[in-house]
Each structure stands twice: as C-alpha cells, then as structure tokens.
Amino acid sequence: MKRYVMGNYGRFPIAFSRGEGSWIWDESGRKYLDFATGIAVCSLGHCHPTMQEALRAQAAKLIHCSNLYQIREQAELAQFIVERVLRKPGSLFFCNSGAEANDALIKLARKFGHDSAPANGDVIRNEIITCTNSFHGRTLGGIAATGQEKVKQGFAPQLEGFVHVPFNDGEALRAAVSPRTAAILFEVVQGEGGINVATPEFLRTADQLRRERGLLLMLDEVQCGFGRTGDWNAWETALRGADFELEPDAVSWAKGMGGGYPIGGIWATERPAPGADFRLCDVLGPGTHGSTFGGTPLASAVSLAVLKTIEDEGLIANADRIGQRIREAVVGWNHPLIREVRGLGLLIGFVIDEGVLAATEHFASSGQTPSLYVVSRLMEAGMLTVPAGSGVVRWLPPLNVSEDEVAHGLELMRATLDALVNP
Ligand SMILES: Cc1ncc(COP(=O)(O)O)c(C=O)c1O
Image (cartoon, rainbow, N blue to C red):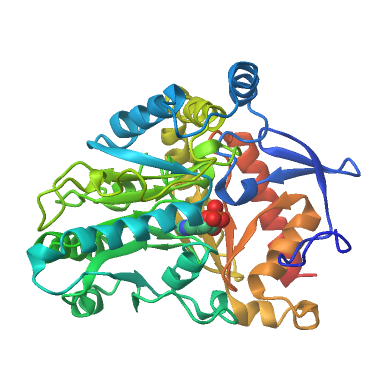
C-alpha cells in the first residue's frame, strides 16, 4: 500500500479478505465482529444473499447505460424512495457518493437562488447556512460546507457562500439568515462530528425559517438515513412525540443506500420553490448537472434490492429496538470510561471520559486520541468500531444485527474497558 497507494488515509495495519453478515475475517483468518460496517455502509451486513443475487442478475442483463437514455432500474429505485421512504412527492438525481450528493444539493440551492432572483429584486440568493462540527464530504463543495477547520487546511481558497452556525442553536440560525440566504443544510445526526442529534427545537426553528424566509431546508442524511436511526428518515426519529412535522425541501444520501455498492442521490420536493413559480425538483433541468456513473442499471438494481430488504425484513424496527437495548445496557454499566451515550437507532456514540482515560497506563504514550485509542483496543479484542471526532467511539452495526451478536459486542466492549481501568 505504502509504495503504490497515496497516503491520504490513516489506516490500521490490517487487511480483510472475507465477510459474512456481522462478521469479517482478516487475511490471517482472524474473525472480527463488524460494528463499523464500512462507516455505516453495509446496512445488510456483508455479502447478503439478496445483494449477491441482485448483483448477479443485473450483471448478466445490463451493467452500465448512459444517462443519455431512459433507465428503468433508476426509475424504479426513485419511485421506491419517493413512495416508500419519503412518502413525499418529488424526484431524484443519482450520483456515486455522499460528497457528490451534497455538491448536487449546493448546486440545487444556488440554481434556485439564481432562478428566483427576479422575484426577490436585485439580490441573488447564493449563500448556504451550515453547522459547526458538521461533515459534508471531501470535495471542494463538501469541505466548504463542512463546519470543521481541519478539513479545509491547505486547500484555500475555499468555495465561497457558506455561513456556519453552532449546531442546535436556533437563535444563531435565525440571526444568520440574510437576504442572500438560499438554504440551510445540516445533518439530523452529526456523524463524524461526534454523534450529535438535532433537537426538536432546532428542527422547528429550521422549518419555521423555511416558511417565513422562503429558503430551502436541505438535510444531509448520507450517514443517518435509510433506516439507521430506527425510521426511514432520521428526522422522523428525532421528532418522535413532537407536535409538528418537518417538511424538507431536499435530502442527500449515500453510504447505506447501496449496502456496499457505491451509489448516492438527492431528492427535491415537487412543491413550488419558495418565492418562485417553479417546482424545486425541476430546478436542475437538462444540461445543468450530471454524472457518467450516476444511477447505472447495476447500482440502481442493487440499491433497490437493499432498500426492499430493509422494508421486507422489518430492519427499521430492528434498528430501533436493538439500538435502544444497546444504549440502555451501556448506560446501565455506569462505566467510569463512558461519560455519555448518544445517538438514535444503530447510530450510537459512546463519549469517552478523557480524564479517566488519561490516568490509565498506556494511553499517554500511545499518542492517539481517546476515541482512536479505544477503537484500537476494541480491534485487538476482535471488534471493529469507528472514532467519531477525537472523543467518541461509534457503533454502526448492520441493520439486521442479531440480539446474540449485540450481546457479544457488549461483552467485548465491557471487558476491554474494564481492562483499561483495571489492567
Ligand atoms: C453526513 C455525511 N455527509 C457526507 C459524507 C461524505 O460521503 P462520501 O464519503 O461518500 O463522499 C459523509 C461521510 O462520512 C457523511 O457522514
């Protein structure tokens, strides 16, 4: 790897050769419980038979076809997402990753601002408000939208037109809206930023601003979407019991959408765009945007098979029930190394108590962040997890994870944490 592959990732010294369900094997044959799932990608676990069959069947029929033509599989996937996942009229654009999906949202917002300019006098709305601690991808658009300095360093000049406000600060959000604001964009659950869930108050303010100020509410569901939180859409879980419904104008996805096959996409509402006489889903007309590989027959057929399996096998309810069980179990431990348990469904963050960890034997000499240190110890114990920021250990089990696998994961984590405080 070092000789022939660029060093842009910090990689663990381990290579995997086989996976099945919630398990993955390294090249030496050692088996690991995979609660990292390629960072929220393998929603059905590894090599699910339905995915294998969808890949095989479509690969034998038609793998690629340009977007110069009609693509039946793409239309069927879009129909499923509109009718079953969102239950809101609108249409989709398909791409290959989360960053690409967010770039499409950024272009959608700018084009909406441009096209609605005459209705708003001279001011062209081309600014997007995003949140601090957010993560929206590694393209130039993605890093400009992301509210973390570390992803921007060395890549100046940044794409203009982004304003960042503290996450879950409704007052700051309101104060940041100006005549130039085209859209608000945020993750309902910040993943890379440390598993921070949007509060109902923040979501209500965002929805009010959408209506009062005629701007777009755009949600990045790249990591938290498609069932992971215990509902098809993360905002539905975040708003359980609330007395209002959120009406996003546009949504981005990737990761779990293809269960491991690369695909991303955005949806835009059929509602007339605020302050304009056109539908938002018509804003990106012919020639405005595109991607050679977006929504190929193969990617679309596999993604549809994944989403249908999530529905048919009741995996959203499974994510909800098992996620709850994991959080309750870990809270019940009252473990000195865990300061807080956060998240929704199977997007779970364990906040490490840095003070307690700092007092343990080998942490200081490791040179690692608290989250990376604990993730590394868990890996040695036979379990894959992911750091979320410097202080949070993230669990992202497959949506079809079993009670037994979770019991095993809990045992491994408890034993690992105990060994750190009582070596
Ligand atoms: C919320 C969110 N948006 C966007 C992205 C970028 O996705 P991708 O790596 O597929 O470009 C990520 C990736 O972690 C993400 O978590």
